[in-house]
Length: 217
Ligand code: TYD
Image 1 (tube, rainbow, N blue to C red):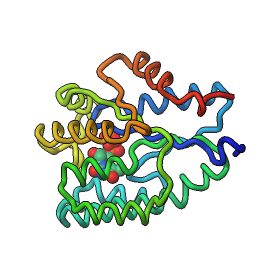
Image 2: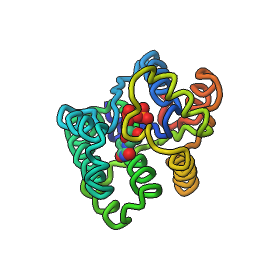
Image 3: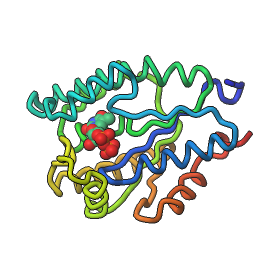
Image 4: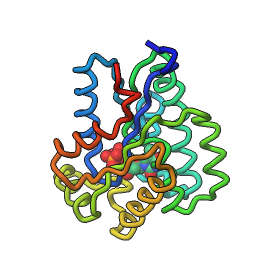
């Protein structure tokens, strides 16, 4: 329930490059919070709501890339707008914990810092889609590019790489640098986690980095 100290639920986002282990860590954190009696919603971007899942399909098919970086950014923004209104904001208003696999830092890293999309456009879209709805905490899972690519390839098996998995090593290195820069620029919200360790060690690091004000009963 929302209280005086927590007028809304708790919003936690997970960020990182391909194969950084976000989904494993979200699952582990959701289980731990649930054991503590917290009401948890797990969601993801692009997608997370029926409308946004349709856009996810369009984006990951590579159509956005053909349209150009700005148009692709608009598709991510449209998906986020629907996801925030249909899922995230209502869950936070109910006092739930929302764990989201990627959020606006993905747009800032992939389309902004690496893709070179105009900053003013990015800021306008951010204002329209999320307004003041910033995450309480963002975990940025950091792994060397070769490790992430190896994990992503193993997970994918025989399937073809999607739009972003198919990018070059240089792209993924620039992405890692972009995430590190975001973490350094916003230390009050972002925690950079060394994710080149076994899953339980990473989960323990994430748990101990959650601000006590959020996890105290
Ligand atoms: P997904 O299969 O969810 O990848 P991952 O398991 O790495 O999270 O695909 C989402 C892809 O979309 C991923 O490569 C990152 C990219 N993306 C952006 O470029 N901008 C965004 O705003 C978001 C949310 C994702």
